Image 1 (spheres, rainbow, N blue to C red):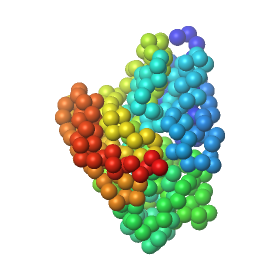
Image 2 (image 1 turned 180 degrees about the horizontal axis):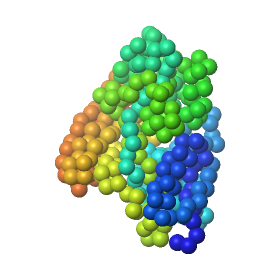
Image 3 (image 1 turned 120 degrees about the vertical axis):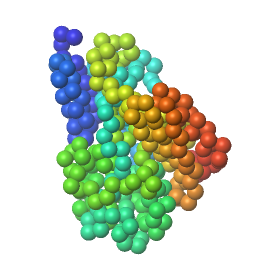
Length: 303
């Protein structure tokens, strides 16, 4: 393309850092780019919990700009993408996945087991809340909104004993030193797609062909498994559902869990098989959990 590719992105510092990774990769392939920041519903509405605003709150305006031709590509956190693809759009590339885990950030006691009895932990995620309560039912889990800097500022003001955020967000912002503890999957299984960057384009467009050069096959396989799992289990954005796949390109392992909002009940399992059948593995794991009553476990999160 003669003109620069216009890459749409949310306007937060983290989103811009992610988009800078995409832009740098594009430039290494000899492509000129222009970054176009766009505010989304999720960025504007900071008073209500994000789960009350529905699915797609961080992608809707970006997709509209893509479909209208105002941008050529859109960069998303893969965990923000609804599992149902928008007509006319497709993910042209998933960049190599970063750290998919969650991180605990605290003051004097930045480790989960060391938090004081009844300690106050900030998170806006039903999944994180449920896993925290499963590990430490004594904790007070309180809502928190805002970008990473805003959440760290609220923590510094003493409004929380700790907060939980995506480890990759801190790393991409150069704040890895703030991580008190990376929470392992046996304590907190990550969100579907966490740690991955998705590059979306109009189907069959020149931009989609260019972006496809950035696609990382193992990450695409992992996301196919996780997203098939989430799509089949259902439950909506308020249901505490988690999954993590790992692929070496040939072999894939997938672990998934459905947990009750209070952390008291959990259905969890894992499967492994050929990475080329990643979506089928996600479907099979979801059906296995549903056969064990997973839908009843997350039912309370629909209230």
